[in-house]
Length: 305
Image (cartoon, rainbow, N blue to C red; front, top):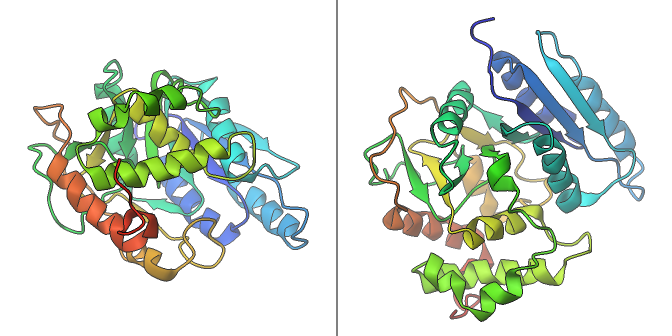
């Protein structure tokens, strides 16, 4: 079929069947030729979760288009950090590049086209390590002359990358002591408040190495920073987070609801920017939103780095 998505998709699911069905419907519309589905197992201390996980797996197994499907359904619970990172390891052990969606990330169809085109365009450019589907500038345009800009900050609510970038992900953060001793974050980020915010997460992640505590996304952000990497961010938001609130792992209400107000839009066209440079002003505006939702980004929680 001519309109089928050529780029492999990894769909990460857990225990929310209604959300997983909505996202799966968008994947079905895109019709990827290759689909990987990875599901973490139910938690032993939550007796109702086994049926919820089973319902999710039934819903996302209804592939009715010409598609190569691979599944990885875990019997036990590994927790968000290991379940997600090991699933991405599994994905990139078999493909060179791909799109990654979780069960609460509802994409527009432009998201798939955007990721596919940028994966192709930046395939051999080591400077670009991630393609994001999220834009949380709340209708403030970035300074790029293209339909996306480059950022030092990354969001992972619908994204894409390459094996060549993911190989820098290290769950042990082995290079972190040298990174901090040489003050390399100052080379990467000009803003002291941003540095303090990120360093707080990374120190917490490093302290949690080897345990279920922490999250995989901090480790991925560190991997990008350690390579002086950039994330491509669309000028409009292409993925809506529909899972904020009860049932969420990291976004349970409070100020997080601001993100739930941002819908998934369509891109009229894809124009590549002339310059491959981080948009510092756009990053400052993004960080201002982060400061509204994350207390660790706020004074007095932020410390000088």
